[in-house]
Image 1 (tube, rainbow, N blue to C red):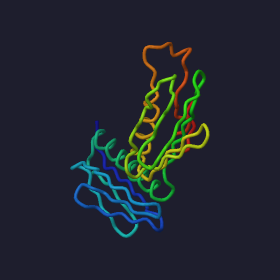
Image 2 (image 1 turned 30 degrees about the vertical axis):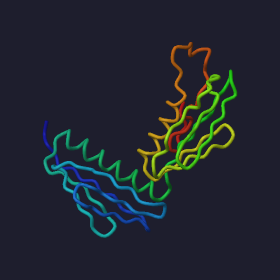
Image 3 (image 1 turned 180 degrees about the horizontal axis):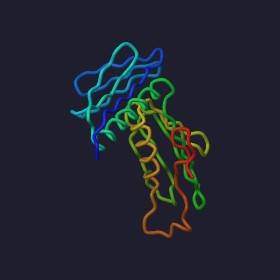
Image 4 (image 1 turned 90 degrees about the horizontal axis):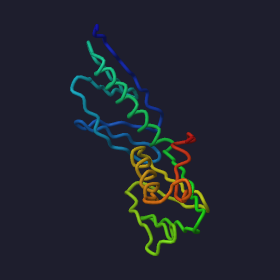
Length: 182
């Protein structure tokens, strides 16, 4: 397979700045800042004015996929500091009325399937969790943190050793960053 030159250019919007410190890229915007390590020795990066350029000379398929992956990460970081990332979850309780509460540091699920001890999960720094009736909203400028927190809340109500066709209680992700989950 012939090797080709690949180049991707990302134009930074107004009020968004990007700094490169070694292997780390720091994107700052109106909602906050995101820091992420994006490393590939064969991909050359350059940051001039408000444009971020990724470039590979005579790259193979592997370098091409790495280039597009880093490009997607940078675009997600820019979206996070300008709009933020939002995940939505739905509380479903059919057998026992469970109570879900969220403080600044933890999420607590009480009376899940009649359990006496509440299930508790710590919220990572930089993530906001809000409970409104039967909807839980997870917000963050970092896509990885928002997604992992939503998945951890869903996993908090995991059911084992029961028939899942009958016991469908739990908390389930319904929307991932604005896109509905089918």
